[in-house]
Every structure is written in structure tokens, then in C-alpha cells.
Image 1 (tube, one colour):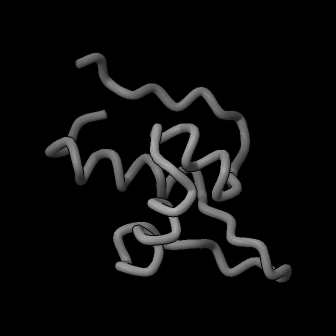
Image 2 (cartoon, rainbow, N blue to C red):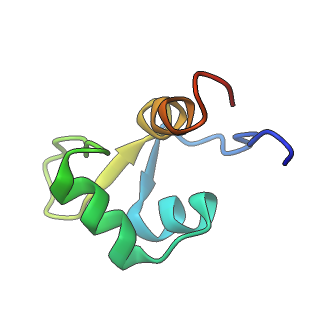
Amino acid sequence: MEPLKLVYYKLFLSVRETADLLNVSTKKVYLLLKKGELHDANMLDSRKSISADEIRNYVKRKNGGTI
């Protein structure tokens, strides 16, 4: 399997963008947030935002330290 490459130039991604990047459903992203495997950024609005660094760290943890 080829390593994941983050090509987004955004600091924060929506749940939909995160799901697309991880190739999972939005429901799975919300589950990961609820379980504490992903952490959302505490933004002022009510929408969930996940930092690109948080997604990168999640992928590293799941892949044994490599992206």
C-alpha cells in the first residue's frame, strides 16, 4: 500500500473533507471523534473542524509511525 500523502493546503478540514481524505464515511469520522481517536479543533462555530496535523498524527498512529 502506498503511503498517504496529505496534499491539502488547509489548516483545518471539515468532517466531510476528513472522511474523503481517510476514505471513510462521515459517520466513521464522528465515531473516531467520539472515541477520542481524532480530536476536533475548538472553533468558535458549531461545525466540527479537524486540523491537518491531527489527521496526520492519526494516520501515523494507525500505520505504526509512518505516513
